[in-house]
Length: 96
Ligand SMILES: [Zn+2]
Image (cartoon, rainbow, N blue to C red; front, top):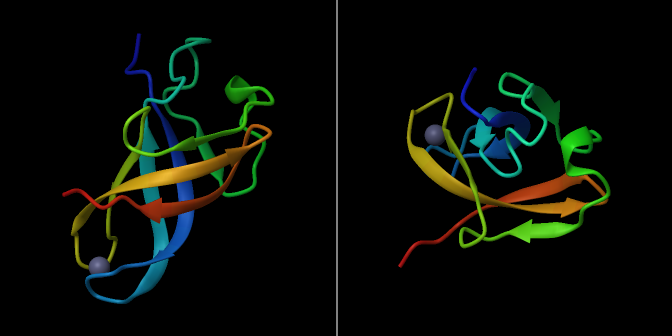
């Protein structure tokens, strides 16, 4: 068995170093439901089969993505907008 998470590749501009690159974000959201998705990678706009036709916004309370900048290594928590089982966009979560 593997950890139940999946990965999202998202082009994003780092708020810290202002470089745009492909971030590798990771989430446990719905992970492990089917037990085989631990190393699955998806891109923005891909159909993510375990999510079905779900539409939800991950806001840090229900779940979130984590990732670090490929350029400078700074860590961020991300929210995501999921529409019909596809991640449409991601955004940095602001923690108070
Ligand atoms: Zn950076």
